[in-house]
Structure formats: C-alpha cells, structure tokens
Length: 451
Ligand SMILES: Cc1cc2nc3c(=O)[nH]c(=O)nc-3n(C[C@H](O)[C@H](O)[C@H](O)COP(=O)(O)OP(=O)(O)OC[C@H]3O[C@@H](n4cnc5c(N)ncnc54)[C@H](O)[C@@H]3O)c2cc1C
Image (cartoon, rainbow, N blue to C red; front, side, top):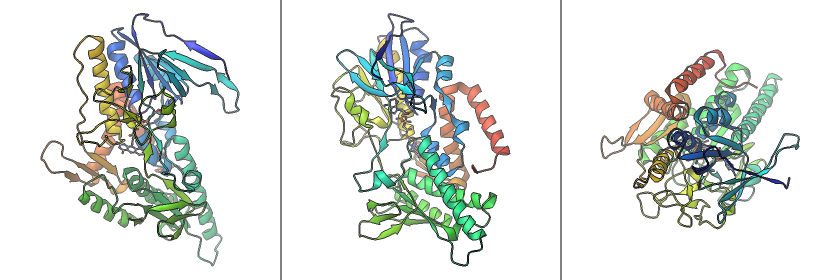
C-alpha cells in the first residue's frame, strides 16, 4: 500500500490540533479528559490514534492469560468513546513523524486475509503526544525472543492461555487413560519476579486448580503442573520493601509456586530454560516478564533523544527537550523521578497521573495561564495474588513508614484501581453500570474460561 491520504480535521479551523498516539492506560484517559475540557471549549481538536479498534486495560492481562477474565467482556471500543466524548479516533499504527512539517504517518490497515482496508494516512498536529506504551525487553538472552512468550497484548495472553489449556488437557487425558507410568509434569516458567511475574504465577496456580475442578478431573494440580518463578536478583518484588517481598514469597510458596531467586536465565530453548550456572530446567511454556523497553517506533520520530531503554526523554512538563511540540508519557517516556538519575517506573499509576497532569497543563497552555510542572505522588503499589488476596505497599500519607496490608482489603484496593480507570473513561453512571454488569456476568459464568 503506497498511497498516502492526508487527513485534516477542520471542524474548528483555528483550534489547536492535539494528536495522541496510543490509546492505552494513559492515552485514552488523556483523550477523554481533553475532549471534555479544551475540546468542549473549542480551543482544541483532539485526535487519538491506536493500532487496535478497542482498548483493553493492560494490568488485566495476567488475568486474561490465566483465564480468570474473558477479554471479550473488557474491551472498550475507541470509536464509541470518541463519539460520546467528542474526539476523533483513527485506527492505524504510527510509522514515523516529520517534525519539520508537524506530520505523523499512520500505516494502512489490512483485514485478516491481507486485503487492504485503509491506506497509509498523514495527520497534522500542533502538539503531538506519544503514549505508545512499552515492549518486552528480552535483554538479548539467546532464544528468549523466539521461545518465551511476552505478555504485552490480548493476543499474547490468549496464546498463552490456549497453550496452558492444551497442556493440561493432554495431561488429564493421560491420567484418564489409566497410564501406569507417572503422567508427564507440565513445567511452566515465569521469568522475572516483578509485579507482573508474581501476579501471573499466583493466578496460574489458581487457574490450574479451577481447571481441574471444572473439567479436567483427573489432573492433579500439584503433582502434574509445576509453576516456577525465576528471578535473577536476590528476592522477588525487588522494587518493593523487603518485608512485602518476604511476605509475598511465603504466600506464593503456600500456593505451590516454586521460587528460584539469584537465578539469572542465560538461554531459553524450546523445551527448557538454562540458568547462569548451566543448569537446564525443563520448561514446556515459558513466559518472559523480566522487563520492558521503549517501542522501536520511537526511533522513527525524527531524531528525538531516547534513554538507554529506548524511551523518550522528557522534562518536568513531559515535553521533549528537542521539540516543545512533542510530549511523551506513560511507559514510553523516561520521566525524571524525585531521585536524581532515576526515572519513574512503567506503572499504570504513573500513566494515570501524567494523563491528569497533561489535560490540566494543555488547558493552562491554551488559556494563557502559567503551566505547572508534573509531580508524581506515589499512592503505593498493590500486587494481586488472586484468591490469596493482594499485597499493598504505600504510605498513604499516614506515616513516614510503609503500610503493608494483605488479604481482602488489598484485593479491594486492587479492584478499585481498575474501577477508577473505567470511571475516568466513562463517568460515574456508566462505570457503575459496567461494574454491576461484570459482576452479574461473573455470577453466571464459570470462574475460569474453559475453552
Ligand atoms: C501483565 C501486566 C500486569 C500489570 N499490572 C500492573 C499493575 O497491577 N499496576 C500497575 O500500575 N501497572 C501494571 N502494569 C503496567 C501497566 O499496564 C502500564 O504501566 C500501563 O499500561 C502504561 O500505560 P501506557 O498508556 O503508557 O501504555 P499502554 O497501556 O501499554 O498503552 C499503549 C497503547 O499504545 C498503542 N500503540 C503501541 N504502539 C503503537 C503504534 N506504533 N501506533 C499506534 N498505537 C500504538 C497500543 O495498542 C496501546 O493501546 C502491568 C503490565 C502488564 C503487562
């Protein structure tokens, strides 16, 4: 497809064109907020671009991968939200940016059979906001990109879930057939014990118990499935307080997760994982959750400066030092934290606060007010352990020490973060209706996706 179509949104010809690339946790919230502030006042025309037609909140991916959530019930259609709030939605993938002409090139779209649906398009902007998230960082470990599954989007989560279901079904069949030999153990390796790896391994243990209770009755979850959580550093959840790490370690062990710390992975093969000391661990399904980097497309943004991890370097107003018309936030941005030389972590909480900040600062900019700087306020970190609850670490402004809560209160806090996201996108009434409808569906559906 080599024809390019120029799209110029001209509803309000004099208004400031804000082009947001990426409708994830941060970008979609920003588009919604801007449409309801500067958009409503006709100070600005807002366009959101995403490669997909629907939004899925990334922190739910481990629940989609384990089968606890049916992604179909959690997709939000960009076009519907755009119409309701008054922004434009363009589907396609950012291919490059011409900074001199203030143009972004959006790739064409083809259907599943490869037939062209939309041509390549060129969009003008006055301000460009990059919110394209992150990609998995395999750290050049041999075989990792080829054999380990990343967890970046719904397709990958579904691919993992189908592999898990197939492996459990086979092992169950083997048992049912009355084989006298011990059934082959299914080995699952989760590499990286940050929040994502911890949440995924806890969810997996629970998923396997549920699968065996629902339809794979001959499968013995403990005997037939081994879930290993492999971490190169000395403890799990290295970014959190040591007490949270120890408490979580104990809970995961009780759930039946084998935890290997101080175990760097030096190679991933089709059926195994090789550790730094040369030990080969059998692995039928390997998931890579060991870190993220900026998406390669950022290198096509006409010479803007990137961090060591390929994220866009931004200052305290989330603008790039090279070009004040370009902003970046969320996982794709390297934004300074209060600690010298340390960037803010790739978390939904950071993306949310930056979206709130940017919607306010665009309003300030477009109404001639003094633009404030972004300050991150850490509201704490909550890590879900499925039915075993969740762990939370934060000071909540109550004391100078970290507060750690577990069990149901931390679980409720975890659910609250997603509800807050829905609320920011859909408003109170719709978010409440959505919550009730999801709860009702959970009453009539099995607790795990069975196909
Ligand atoms: C399994 C998992 C669990 C997590 N759990 C938590 C948690 O419990 N708490 C927490 O705070 N954080 C969690 N995170 C991290 C959190 O999801 C991210 O920090 C957050 O989603 C970042 O928001 P974002 O808007 O920067 O990027 P994203 O939400 O990743 O959105 C990026 C968007 O950009 C689009 N895009 C990408 N490239 C292009 C392109 N070239 N052109 C057009 N569109 C493009 C994508 O389709 C996507 O919609 C988790 C992440 C994972 C993977």
